[in-house]
Length: 255
Length: 306
Image 1 (cartoon, rainbow over the protein chains, first blue to last red):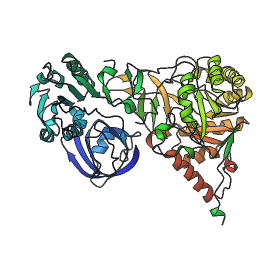
Image 2: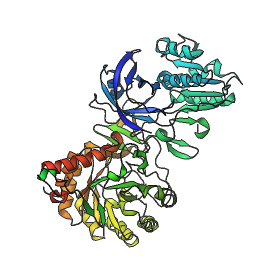
Image 3: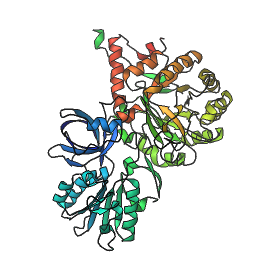
Image 4: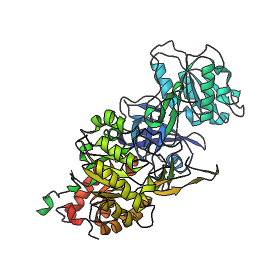
């Protein structure tokens, strides 16, 4: 069940000058899934009118701990990245549909995150591991210094990296990485990142015969399926990313 | 002593009796179920479901939304699955909310509007229809009928013949004199007018040097439009005898009372639902408290006080 709730910021880790990792405490519904998002009300920005949809990086209903990885993209996210511990943050959660957790434990699964798109891969990787799967990660960024939360990903599974400038792993975009080019290596690929990268990953997955889910981030107002602003064109027509997604199987999309 | 008496908030629009004056604006509250986790739907005076057309519509291409100072632009373009889908698949799910169900109706020509109304007429649970002659986001029809007296009259007349219950006509602010259009709708048989729909606007992404919306222009809503809406409600309430329903940037009980003092019999809450999905409950409670503070026993006493 969705709810509106006040959370209290307990830690704001500035990962780089562009990214912050917020840890918050509050009441998290027990049915939260990896790939879902929250709608955060930004009270400390006069120019921000709408809530900001933010991926859940990690959520633990037992301890009420929620983590959000945020990129400074404008006034709203700047204000969130500037919050100090003790700040009270109102959110709607959990929203949307998450990634599918395969029932078959032998499913070979690669989680691909580009830039701030690594956010949902943390909880997804942890949940997959808790369910007996062995996910591997492919993390992309502009440069080695912007490979986010890489040490934490390494605790869950093998990590492959790609950087635009070649300072870590293979040089180039994540979807061009050789790990994605091996026919038969993956049964499933889950991806979140910039649209061109996700389209590239979807194409690579298709060519090696892997199932592929992607998480979209179309601009939205309500996050609840009411405003019909965040629509994505699918094989079934225009649907709301906030309620049908944000995670889609690429077979549903017109990519 | 008097302070302990609960004020009467009930209002009547046409033959529709509402327990309070708070309605949800079309296109901002989905079909209600999107909000049922956040608030009890029966607390609403009425809820107005998304604009419904004769044939299904896919709406405009993405992007359809841009955030603006104290508001937002939208260019959804009446995406909906058509009236038959509503009748067969949605009606049964939304008729039992314990609040008045109102369907917003749109079309490309007067006969389309009338045909939608005709297909809704057998559904007793639909207490009123709100005829949208003011959508700025569709190429044909929509706002075209709301910007001339002849257009408003033609649509209202056609729907009046097809619809037996309360008929609300939703007006566009994108006109020189909204009172003329309101009078035309009244003369053609409307039981009430609601105003304002969105103001036409535009925003540009200066880095990409492109419009923010796929349609270039869109409809502005939110607190940014509120003073314009209050002014138009005030003018219109003085020009017609039928009830005026006020909307445009209402985000609090204070805003609702502002519209009622200016002449609104009831109010609609729109964009504010996106930011606070329980805002309507808070507005009802605030209105009630305001009445107690001001010694108002019946909310109808204050309508058009200004």
